[in-house]
Image 1 (cartoon, rainbow, N blue to C red):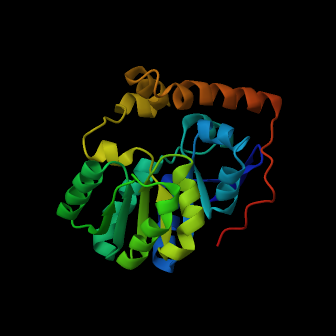
Image 2 (cartoon, rainbow, N blue to C red):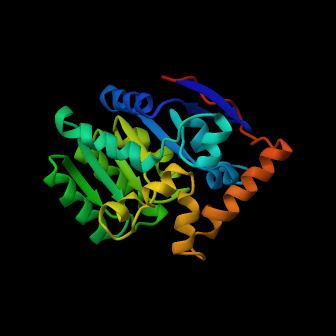
Image 3 (tube, rainbow, N blue to C red):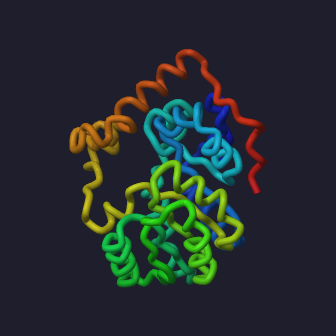
Length: 245
């Protein structure tokens, strides 16, 4: 894989299978490792959110999730949901312990049941309905479960900040945010059809399904990203990302 500068944000560009292999190695090596999936809206948020900037700067890998980001760094898309699915397919044969943290109680319970039926050793299914002052207790639950792979369906920036604050305490090999993946896996939400994914129109398809709720990420974020790229805007990171482990 190669590290590409995207307006000050270092993206780990490369083939999907390469990144899966790297993340699988992180799971087995022990932590803390933190993967961030970068899309246009998140890149724009980095301009004004210092805490999110630090979480991304300290992440051990940052993938090109959204189509605008992937095109900008000339890399294949590596959507977080697909990375998580690939890791979960490996989990049974490699004996990984998996923790699910996020979404509503009924959703995360449903996903845990589904994955256990597929042979995944889900050692914790914890909803994401907790405040910042309850994060320590949630992280302690993960640590007690001895999970090696932790999937956070907490949304941005909560997932990134939680992983940064509590990654060492949780003790997992890899922690990664998975956005709304639990809702998709549980059947509560639909993912974009194949034609939208292949053409880079997943964001537009999702926006049409919920115009108000998804306007920021699906429309405004990509538009601002392209504007900032045209202007040569750079994200004011305090320092460069550490070299790969």
